[in-house]
Length: 258
Image (tube, rainbow, N blue to C red):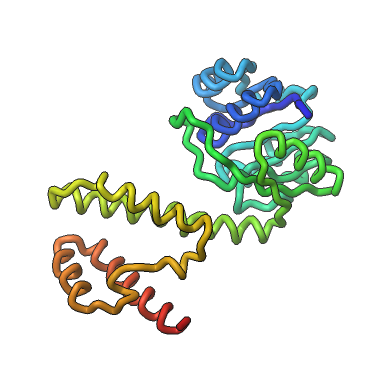
């Protein structure tokens, strides 16, 4: 089911989703953004018109997709009035009800994925959807299935819980990678040698529970190795603190779950 779309936003989420929609043959009528340069760049790529005035939203659109910051969404009722045209937002931690004063038909199309517009390869993206009526949910589901095989209905609370899980598994882990890369750089060792290990760790999660795959000195309670590591981190207090807390957490968790 091909649709006419309006993209509201020109950042990472709007750019990647826009490319996915465009690749599947959906007609993107407009890219609306306060930043004309960004709107123009994305619109040119997607064969759309660049617009900065939210009042000039194309009423022919089947779906208007809002991909802006959570902060901007909080004031959406001030700047978007779509009548009975379907409007969805793409946020994981914002209620669908934020759109109730913007349209009579509204919902959520949340991509459970880290999206970066600099990446040219389109990632696999599971979508969590919701709508204010069953009819709206069915429309959003049919639309989402044109770009992803993994589409699930999720309430505001479901999405918030999964958004939290996404932060701890992706954002927090990436920060740990950042600290570790800094450690490796300062210590003169090659961080890239860890990439196959990281890839294998994630790959195992496809067929195994994370708790069953835990390895390392903490689960073995190898105090000698742990102390060696901690002594090496004396010049890296932030990483040292995380190391000690994670070691304690791993040891206690697996002790309690034997």
